[in-house]
Length: 95
Image 1 (cartoon, one colour):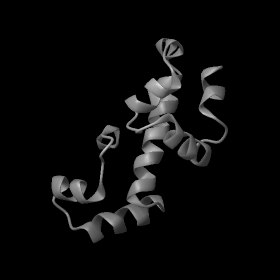
Image 2: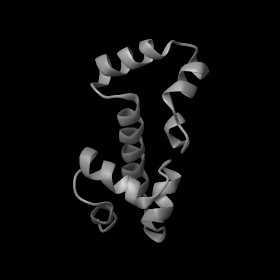
Image 3: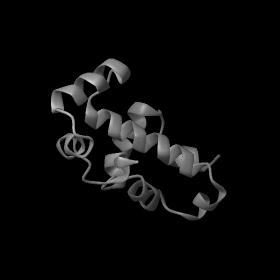
Image 4: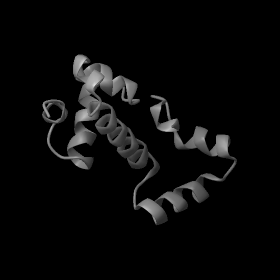
């Protein structure tokens, strides 16, 4: 769950998994049709959706949930939420 790190970067990840940056980039592009940054943020949004469905999450703010998912701010998350999920995060929490 490397994507939970707010400082997640392709450079650090390639060192961690011991592959060349172009190998990682090619793998992600081929298998997900995304860049590393897009994949990290999509994973964060997927995790946010998962957390938001939990009953205990109804007691938390969107800001708190977004930070748990690796985003630096709610505003940063909103941009990717709209792209990868649609709508706005508060709509999801109302369900």
